[in-house]
Image 1 (cartoon, one colour):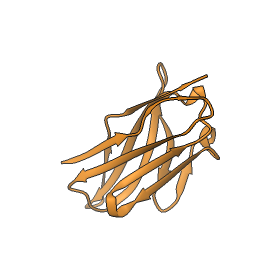
Image 2 (tube, helix red, strand yellow):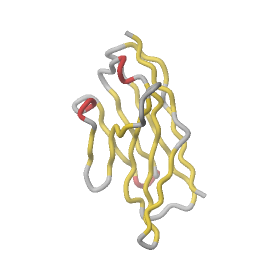
Image 3 (cartoon, one colour):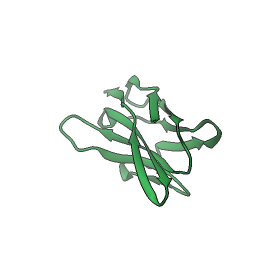
Image 4 (spheres, helix red, strand yellow):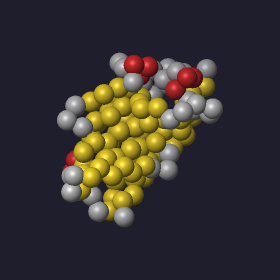
Length: 117
């Protein structure tokens, strides 16, 4: 079994910062990519940032958010600076594993980020 556990969410004022962490445990090998998605009320889940051989960011967070990964700890981080009320959402950790040419996708339980104006 593979488990992803997020932490670091909370309530912050606009302009503030938060750092999300996601620790992966279980039968893990050949991590293809790790990333963060978010889902605001009434909206679809969207990609925030992804890290594999390179990093990708949603246009709305470029220059404000930074994704990083500690392979030794099977952990991915999301440093969020200059937060805006529109960043309010549940943030989900995502991991893609490759086994025998098949890609498996795993999700964390989500962590709430609320940015007040």
